[in-house]
Amino acid sequence: MNKTKDRAWFAVFTVPLLFIFTTVVIIPFIIGIFYSFVTWDGIPANPKVFVGVDNYIQIFKDQRFMASAWHTVKFTVLALLSVNVLGLVFSLLVTSKLRVSNAARTMFFMPNLIGGLILGYIWQFLFTDAMEFVGDKTGLHHVFFNWLLNPQFALYAMVIVFTWQMAGYTMIIYIAGIQGIPDEMIEAAKVDGANLWQRITRIIFPLLMPAFTICLFMTLSGAFKIYDVNLSLTKGGPNNATEMFAMNIFNEIFGYGRYGLGQAKAIVFFLVVAILTLTQVAITKKREVQM
Image 1 (tube, rainbow, N blue to C red):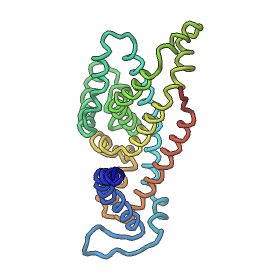
Image 2 (spheres, rainbow, N blue to C red):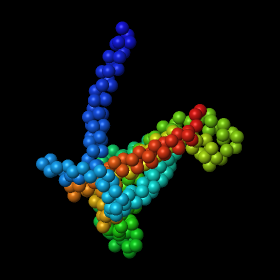
Image 3 (cartoon, rainbow, N blue to C red):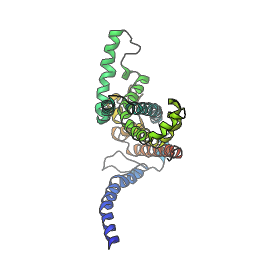
Image 4 (cartoon, one colour):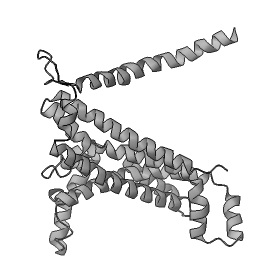
């Protein structure tokens, strides 16, 4: 009787979720795979012509797509380092005996509560009008100029905005990891003569590996999939110098009406993100230490 009741409760909670997941994720994904083998302009009245793997072959001849892939890789590497280094520094700072640690936590986390579109528009003002104003007042025009009009600096501007948004979020995860380390272990290391650097590298970092696994995964997948900041801050410009993977796929499908080619790009994009993130999780999970 109890087993039947348990199964009924299990079904009540899992069947609706499975139904939603199947209809919202699995079925559209399978339809997307089908579209990647056809050529179609998205108009229901027009036919879908099966072209086999031609869309996948065409991807690698698309110089603009390959350029967006390179921009995304550069952006992801820079963002991965900046977000996690800054998030870790923030967490070490607010878990120390700082008097304003609670206020600092709030201030560091607050940018994450603002959407990427709004963040992009706020920073657009800072990188254009504010930077030019400071440049005019100080004469340092080689530093304070409109970054969004420079192909190289526009990418760095995106990294800064993404870091400002994500560092506070990773800080929370690192704080949880640091607070899980027993004080006795740190005190024992101090008694044994370990200095601050030795305590961080030999005790704190190894025990923080679960937090590193989560933060690196979130940063890696988030940086690869970035679209809102890309749209609001640079719109892929100047001269497509900051067009990322996601924006290229969106433009291909909804801008040029090439649904088949856009879906093929989306499948390749999915595979790249899945392989990289799963590899990262496998590597960092092996380094996790159990107390």
